[in-house]
Amino acid sequence: MSDSPPATQAPTAVSLFEAFLFWLKLGLISFGGPAGQIAIMHQELVERRRWISERRFLHALNYCMLLPGPEAQQLATYIGWLMHRTWGGVIAGVLFVLPSLFILIGLSWLYIAFGDIQLVAGVFYGIKPAVTAIVLQAAHRIGSRALKNNWLWAIAGASFVTIFALNVPFPLIVLGAASIGYLGGRFAPQQFSIGGGHGAAKQSYGPALIDDDTPTPAHARFRWPRLLLLLLVGAVLWMLPMGVLTALFGWHGTLTQMGWFFTKAALLTFGGAYAVLPYVYQGAVGHYGWLSPTQMIDGLALGETTPGPLIMVVAFVAFVGAYLQPLFGGDSAFASGALAACLVTWFTFLPSFLFILAGGPLVESTHGDLRFTAPLTAITAAVVGVILNLALFFAYHVLWPQGFGGHFDWPSALIALGAALALLRFKRGVIEVLAVCAMLGLLVQLLVPLGA
Image (cartoon, rainbow, N blue to C red):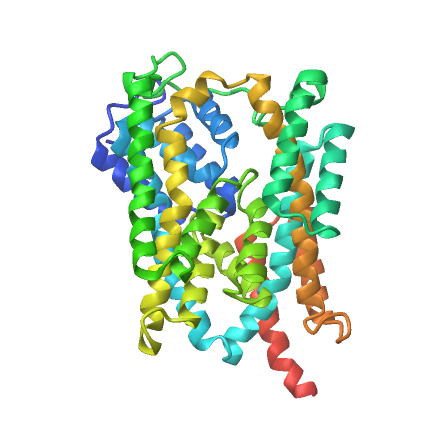
């Protein structure tokens, strides 16, 4: 079948194998963060192949925006599920993640093994200021969409103060924002009626395989027995590896605690990966000490340069934590790190699959219900304050590497300023900005010893 069927004809049925090949391709080219990944899916699935109509695509996207977890990966899972039932959703979601997992395991090993070499150090020296600018851009992008009135601005400001000045845990901020949103939806509904922000479909690209008037397939309709069965299967898939880890290493073992911690993180990722990074930092760096603040920034830099969801930075966190404290002795560092990265990926993404496969029909039936959307609107506003705090945290560690008592790193400041201008003013792509900043960092590292 041609990728682009005639504009006047609906595409022929797509086999599961053909869909498998597309989802594999998507997993290998899905650079650019959620916005870039969603744009690629829209271009491929709506405009070129016409597997799904514009309206149905946006309806699925708005649904995924309401869920915790990486919305682009969930959107792929949703469309795969809609087209080819449960296995279609599993294949689409897994292939969206798997390439980036293998790439990150390899890059994490290179980072630990060769991070002190001048070439590698120079690249990371330039990428770190760029990551600071990227996080600032994320706060601006989400804030411009979410903060539409003074109520939501106040929630964002309160969120920033509580995490920056009071060090309140991220889960409590989410809970507080949800409570405010619930009450706001009841007593000031006009202030909390903002939806996912993607609007209605405005363009048609011709007949689609799943078109506007295509009936909802039987497997996508809500049924209590199916919901209960999938919840049971999901519980078993979580408890089985958790039980094995607890039996082998105890509840306080590194892998057991990683599985538990990243399960909680997966349930708190309202607003995407940038929203949960402060929670990961509080736990992985501050509480458990699995890696240092500098390594956390480096991990985000690696995540930005690889395909797949940005939340895959959790694989780097797990790899470094287990590599530096090998589980099976000194010669097993790589095996420990790779095992930890795979397990953490399992615990992080399992809830996303359950939200789509088990909760899809149920949540879709409540889409647009203010009692459901108002708390999420408030959470999104709170996320803006949390991300701004994250940007300041990164800026502090990049610009004052030895703390405020040490020197101000002016080359990093210039690189960060240039990256911010490129992203916010000139709308350049993330990969392009990272590549230029990496070259600038390498140049600085080569010149500084000469001027010393």
